[in-house]
Each structure stands twice: as structure tokens, then as C-alpha cells.
Length: 264
Image 1 (cartoon, rainbow, N blue to C red):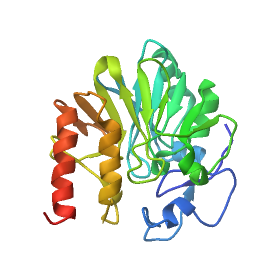
Image 2: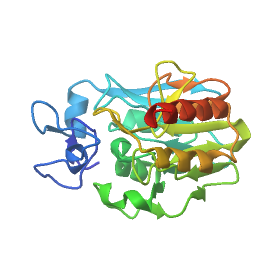
Image 3: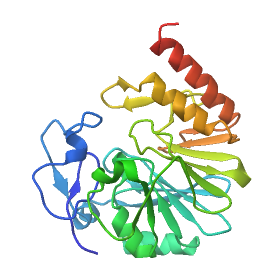
């Protein structure tokens, strides 16, 4: 695989060397305190990073890196009968990790919640010959353009009869979540951020810089999610999961959030 530059702070791989990382310079992220730093896949391997593959729930396999890279998120392999979908993304990939994922049935499609999680998505797409579904509203943040990327428009997009992407629009205009209907599951990354008290989620324009999301954006997300039932909500990090009553947890979380945001 090509040894292209990876931003050490956000973990996104770029198509060619550059002095800056636009994703980190945006107000929703940040440039590391020691300035812009870069790495590569080979350098990560030399530093001892390896793939981490562990069950996260029924039919859901967590895929991350040990020790963690960038902001420490993990991806999720959704083991659907129509073909596995890799939800969200990490920076690291090597031959051993490819083999482990192939033993689990491979990857038929990739979908990523928002630009902070784009990682090395093209490396993964090429390794598994899988399309990457990104909402068109976030087109400008794709750091390594490639024909594998499929930009979709509108409020929802079906990957299969069982799996639907919803453009919730929180955090980024193209911020998307994935609903798995047969399992009553919602995969949210940090579009709906599962918080330390895992009975609740939150809605932020910027998590690291503590910029709250605008109330009208949260209301739109709630309206779009209203038709979908789900018990579990899988956030973007290991064990960040709402384990039961997920749809009501999202609703009451939004009501609490809006009460504080609007001082009512």
C-alpha cells in the first residue's frame, strides 16, 4: 500500500504531502499543541501499532488499533446477511488486520459518520474492493479523492433492505448515522455522542472545543430519526454504547439538551 501522509492529530490520510491539515484547522478540531505532525502507515507499524479486533455486541465487531492512534476511535464491522458493512474508520491497516477481517467475511461496503473519522478509508476500500458512502455535504473534507467514494444526497440512503444511512446533520452538515432495522440498532459515531453516563447522548458542533450544536439542527435530526426504532446506540469509542431503550434515550437526551440550550 502507498505510504501516504497521515495527520497525527485527526488520523486522516492525505493523497500527497502538504504543510497543513484542513480538517484540524477547522474550528471543530484542533492542531496539536506541538504544531502540525505527520506520520505514515509504515511509521505507525514501526512504532508498534497493530490492529485490535474484539466483539462489541451481537453481530458487531469492533476494529481499532493498539495502542490507539489519533483520537482513539474504533470502527465497527456490522455483520449483516447481505454483506458486512464497515461503519466508521481508523488510520491503521496491515496485512494481518486485512486477513482477520476477511476471516470475518470481509467488507462489502464502508460508511463513515463524519470527516474526523475518515482515517485511511481509501486504503480500506482498496483492500476489500468496497465502496465508501459519504454524504455529499461533506465532499470538501475528503482528503484523498478516489473513485471508491460514493457521494449520496438527501435525507436517507439505503445500503440494503436492512441498513439505512440517515443524514442527521449534527457536528457536520453531512453527519450521518446508520440504522440496522432487523437488530434494532443505531450506529452514531459522535453524531449522537454516547457520553460517560451511557444512558444518554449529546449533540455537539465541536467536541474538543466544546461548541454546542445549534438547536434547529438537533430538532431536524430528531425528526429524521423519529420513524426508526432502536434499542442500542453504538458511539465512536470502545464500549461507548447505550445498551437499552436507545430511541427514548436519544429523545430524552435531546429534550434535556434543548432545555439547557434555550434556557427553558
